[in-house]
Amino acid sequence: MNWRSKLLQPNRRAPQDFHSLAAPTHRGSTVVFTSPEQVRDGWRDHAGGYAYGIYGTPTALELGARIAELEGALHTFIVPSGQSAIALIYLAFCKPGSHVLLPANAYSSNSELGAGLLRRYKIEVEPYDPLIGEFIAPLIRPETALIWCESPGSVTMEIQDVPAIVAAAHRRGIPVALDNTYAAGVLFDAFAHGVDVSMQALTKYIGGHSDLLLGSVSAGTQDAHDRLGATQSALGLSASPDDCSLALRGLQTLSVRLETMERSALAIANWLARQPEIDAVLHPALPSCPGHQLWQRDFTGSASLFSILLNDRFSPEQVDAFISALQLFKIGWSWGGVNSLIMAYPGLARRAGKPGRIVRLHIGLEDPADLIADLDQALKLLNQAS
Image (tube, rainbow, N blue to C red):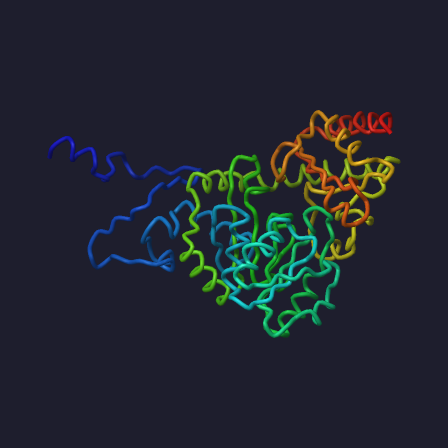
């Protein structure tokens, strides 16, 4: 054989009995079949083999299988981002003329998807009070195709009565989807509480290091599985095996990171609650958080994310100066990584009639005493400025 042809032969030369603690990273688009009789095509083939890389490499399917096992799901689909996970759910369950109920405190990109792209396709997304619970029933219409929950809300942190919403929805045959990113799929048991579809931005806690973009969509019913799989295949929502490999590594340290962040966040939240500049601390484990009793009932722990309401004597510009004075907290979107982050939400505050007051914190793996000292010096500067 000519050396040029030898370069292209996929046959392995190294011994194949290598066993490692690390899941292998499989890169590939074309799947090679050993005979014409073995040729297959379609997204369902993951159950008995592989057809093409767009339907999932062994690395992506391994990640999906591990998340499905953690969540107690029938199957988990891996997609390129949390936002693509949200879009996949909408497009799997909705059609022109559909009506969707979305909590008013939902992740902003979810709301923007409803107000923009989905509206163009004649899908109506109606916001509802996240604390409505069983009283969501009168909002359900004949054309309602989907009800979203997000508990807690990722900025204002309200805890929803998910079982009550599920009961009202299922009486009318309506599926319920949950953005379960805050709980990392483990602090709130979505399927035990009756949810049909649970999604996560794996970018956050499971990735854990702010260096990947991934999403997961877990199906709790066969109908949800079939709808999601067919839609993912049609849209070509495949995920990078390299990002999947990083997420598989992140899963190994998820428990220790979550536990450390929970302890630190609680210590910092309790310290902030004692500061005169803070009107309220919106942390699910504290009584000041709306729906705290539901968190006690339904969750097995809290995570790294919470918000504060600064006193309304501070202007938006002073709030910005407070944030700029912080040294350990970085200004940035997202959360769940090892670095502490902070972000102001003046738009949310203005809707509540309190301009510039809502600030969200993600507590990373820095020493909590250092983070408290950083907040303390910034609050002192804020007082001097006012």
